[in-house]
Image 1: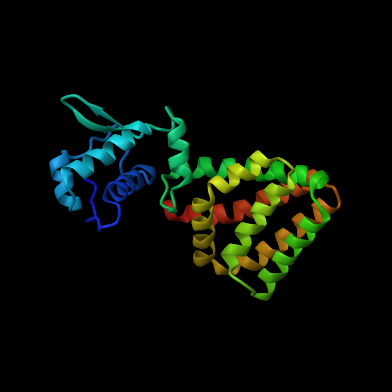
Image 2: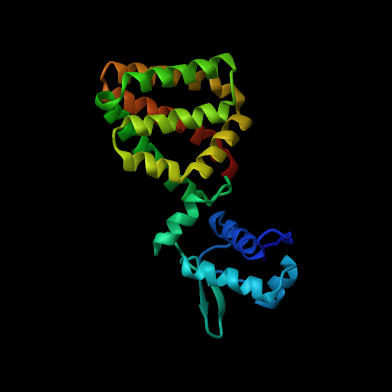
Length: 235
């Protein structure tokens, strides 16, 4: 049975909901699992049954669980039957603890999105944006500023350079998760930074030379570098 941590005083309903959602997104609670009785869960969490029930109702409205008469609360397979709220909840999830298949799907989506942005940047990027991205890579190499912040901003600028505002909006929507994954990657393997810098310089060179396939390939290598490291958590 999943373990629960007592909730503090901040926004009890939201805090309960976040803890339950984290267990679903991490795979600790799987589709078809039944949550404990609300009275028992409320006691374990240290909250009132009313707060717990409101949190469960919110999760039900977002498609993560179903409240079934005489059966209790059942975890849904939100990936097979998503709701618009499911994606919004995932976007606001600020942890790297993701179910393996969900992590893989997210990385595949990111590779597709940023590869397409890199292709489009070859013909849409402004000279000022290119120089700004070069300056970010210089700052990474010189140890100036926060590394994770520089890396996140670099990739956000890449999506903006695509000339498609929806691409940058999608990327920005996953900001909390992407930031968490970037930080975890370089904390697990700080030695990757030099190769990461080299790949980003090659990416910018390909964009500047209007080589869309080469630019897309470099993006794939950059993201896969992090995926290879983070995959170790699942083995």
